[in-house]
Image (cartoon, rainbow, N blue to C red; front, side):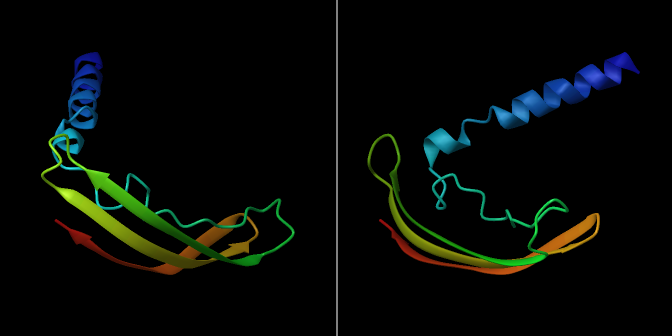
Length: 97
C-alpha cells in the first residue's frame, strides 16, 4: 500500500513539474478561469453575482510567440445551508503572433 502511495506522489510531482509552461505560456496568463466564487454558510448574502476581468500579455523565452488577451468572467453563486453551488459565463478575445 505504501508503494502505491509513493508511486502516486512521484507521478503527481512529475506531472506538476512539467516544462510546458516554459515553452509556451498559457493564454489566460496563469489565472484559474474555472474558479467560481460562492458565498459560504457564514456569509449574510445567500446569492451573489461576481464579475471579473483581465488583460494579459505573455511571450515565450525567445519572443517568437506573443499572446495578448482580454477576458471577462461573470458568475453567480448560491448558498443553501451547508450546500453551495455556482455557475457562470466566461469569454475572451485575443491574438497570438
